[in-house]
Image (cartoon, rainbow, N blue to C red; front, top):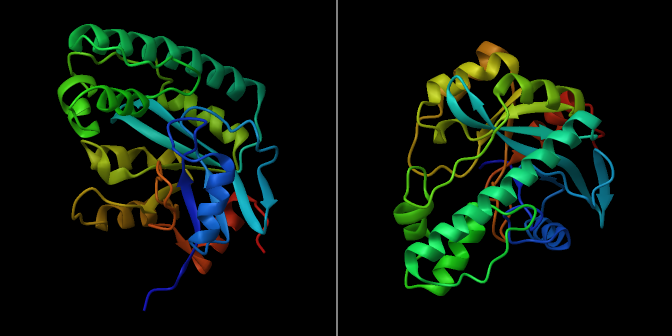
Length: 264
């Protein structure tokens, strides 16, 4: 029998493109029987988390971030855990949010023009394509998935690119601000081998997360051994459900030690 999960280290809130408020996130973690959860909003630190790690209602709340970057392996996502904001990271997240608003407004305009609908959606800080997909689905007969595949997905007719930081710059920013920096969901990329090859600059890699299809995790295990990485994991939750993936007590203790975070 597998050991129970105690930590979910990948979750999103309404601060980016998740459906949960911070209060909802804490409640969902308690419902899932977790001891810890990491807030890892896209390109944005949560304004209501004041320290790298906090205790909220008996739950350990870890301040994190997920940054999308351009790399030699294509676009990948980096996770920073135990974040204490620096001036340079704050400046970059501010720039990314301004770019998100620009991009969001452009995609909304393209979708409205193409479909002849009013999405009743404003490009506010934190906006992402899931917001636009949900608004489009509500205004049309399309599903959220169809909005992505037919309209706003990469190379779709309503797609607009983003101005992302490069991999080296993002690594430097996160290394200065976070206790641990890792590669998110490595087997979801178009070229997982190339993505895993980036791990020589990183401290960790996600080993446990909801896979989109049956996969062989052996390449991740080999990268962990080769680069002496800390295995992390989480649900990558954008909805209200936590605990679909994460770390057991031993894995969480190892993670905390590596990240310099207190462990109960």
